[in-house]
Length: 306
Ligand SMILES: NC(=O)c1ccc[n+]([C@@H]2O[C@H](COP(=O)([O-])OP(=O)(O)OC[C@H]3O[C@@H](n4cnc5c(N)ncnc54)[C@H](OP(=O)(O)O)[C@@H]3O)[C@@H](O)[C@H]2O)c1
Image (cartoon, rainbow, N blue to C red; front, side):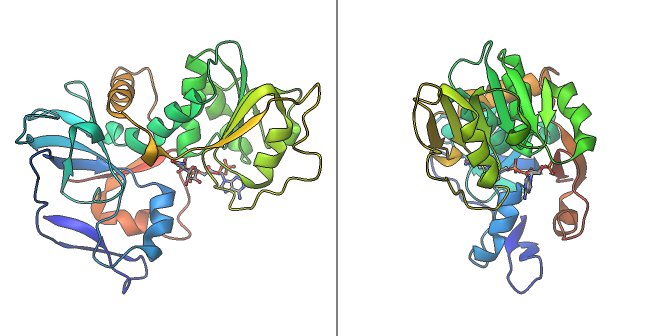
């Protein structure tokens, strides 16, 4: 089969080449990958990966061989597939635990954004507890995870505040469900009950200062690329600031993701959740689609395998 493999002799650290088909164990189904949607984190990690490895966390495709032990998805089903490698290839192995089965007729292109971006948003928001009637800040609203978090938090009944540095993105965030859009947490009037943070750095520190008593900040992402420096007093508890918590998150350690991925795929298929696909391109264009200097689209770039 053809696969993108790590190739440090290339400026992109990638080469498209023939590799052996994956060899399924008894618990593995084989998926014909139809699309994958690289995360910026996947691309940033390339220089540190071993030569020859097939990268990529998420993919969507069609089951072409069921697992011999009878578990997992059935022949012909469209699935969202999550793993820590081997997504950027024509075929990928998947266990019952690593896939969400999409409804019949689901579009693999739109399903390919589910595994990392949508599922991280869903699981990160769950850490904030019930959202109905609560004010929630999505720090990094235009990130791939943030675009889902805005929609899901609004669906759950939250009053959503989203951040972006880009004024041109305000309208889109409002259309997706944001009640308010600001450039940074320091622009907020009043407190929030919870924060889903995709940025880190000074944004995290400022957002923590806006947490109401009992509130939680989930440090899910670090797109700002800065350290977090709390000043003396920032972590004090008093009548207005007691019981605030900050927790970290790692999708790879989240249990039982299959049913949530299946639900997200069904919501996208049913038109109730916007996959916010920025562009669909041929998978052969992977390095060009993400090359330095290429203007970023709002939403994920999906790479389709013809
Ligand atoms: N913990 C986990 O399991 C997990 C899972 C998924 C993702 N993540 C992490 O979550 C973060 C978001 O990932 P993603 O793929 O959704 O992100 P993304 O699509 O690359 O978006 C990043 C966003 O951050 C904003 N941004 C970038 N640099 C910034 C800076 N210096 N200051 C302020 N804002 C900045 C940009 O928004 P504007 O230009 O609109 O301001 C951009 O839209 C990443 O750090 C990723 O590694 C973690």
